[in-house]
Length: 101
Image 1 (cartoon, rainbow, N blue to C red):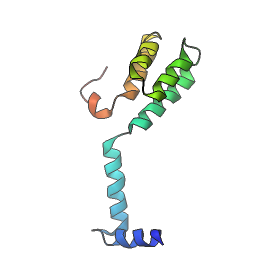
Image 2 (cartoon, one colour):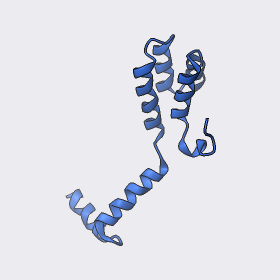
Image 3 (cartoon, rainbow, N blue to C red):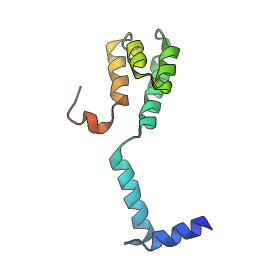
């Protein structure tokens, strides 16, 4: 029943349901990745490339518990290029628009 209601509401939008859905997708893309998506991207990189780094498990715990200072202190012990890449993954795109490091 809810999907029928949603379809009726979408069909009432300018351009119809297809245009309304397209606008919603474009708005979501324009916002960039969410904090959770950025954190998960950092996790995936860390899992693939940093599993043998010192304090890897502690860094993961700090990443997902929101202990940013602890996380950065642990990751900063790793090779500079890995630490820089991880920090870059965690920064919102809007904050790094002028930063190309």
